[in-house]
Image (tube, rainbow, N blue to C red; front, side, top):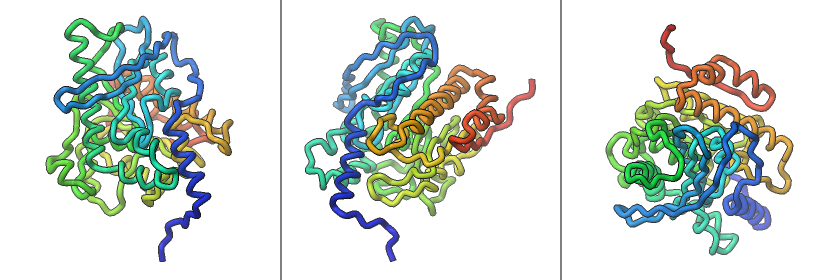
Amino acid sequence: MSTSPRWNRPRLALVIAALCAVAARPSDVSAQSAGTYKVTVRDETWHDAQRDRDVPVRLYLPQDAPAAPVVLLSHGLGGTREGMAYLGSYWSAAGYLVVALQHHGSDDAVWKNVRPLQRMRAMRQAANGQNLMLRAGDVSFALDHLHAVTEDGMGLGIALDLDRVAVAGHSFGAHTALAVAGQSFPKAPGARLLGGDRAPFRDPRILAAIAMSPQGRPGDDQEAVWGGIHIPVMSLTGTADADPIGRGTKPSDRLIPFQSIHGVDEVLVVFDHGDHMLFSGRSQPGRNTARDARYHADIQRVTLAFLDAYLRDDTAQRDWLLDGGAAKALKGDARVEVKPTARPSV
């Protein structure tokens, strides 16, 4: 007997409307001050001549910051560069250049001109290997572009440290982040398209990855899928982080990357009652807004600590994450698990 939920038309319409509202609008959670840098937000469109592909970006520029490390931020399915502004502005205020990418083919154009009851189907169809390949290419191109504008003297008006780069993403953006971190796809739909080489999209310039609502598949050869990741990873999910587009993903599937990646520092944060839309930063009717605001502050805090630990070599932040400080700080909101690697003795 099938265990999938039966959706009546009114209920399905409400779910689709909620998903698309989150995808369409920017985050409305005010960033708490993470630092002293004033943040300038600027939208640009960068053109990848090699792929003849435009990549819209939203830049969060920390003014007067010394040599800003870089975070590339990838939206979820049906989203835009405007999403997760509560993270982009927060990280940038702490001195990071945040480049929020928009991925044509899996952005809001997927559903905008589609009849409401057909939107869920359109979203499922867009979650494919071709779009994952394009998204991974967007990430690497964005880094290429930053190097190019820095070398030709044009720059972005701030100093950059392009030797310290992280990638972050939510949902399909988490897929994107882990793909460029070194994930492989031996049995995935479209595996032939995704390449026969191990970790076909790994970009060695990326030093750390943050995956919000990541996903693994039970029954896969997990070593074959995840064994190519050799950089620190933070996974964030919730106990109610199920599949919003009806593909059957369970909250337990979100734990598979953390359970299956080995040999690097890993942090897992699981929010009590946290659902898939928690990480978008967008308030919705019927949500527990007080809890969401508290959880968003938690997300800001732990992700910034992760970035500081692995892009700025901040041992105090690494110790806070791995030695119980984060677990104590988030107690009552989230469960924190860690898989630290051996640290050199002093």
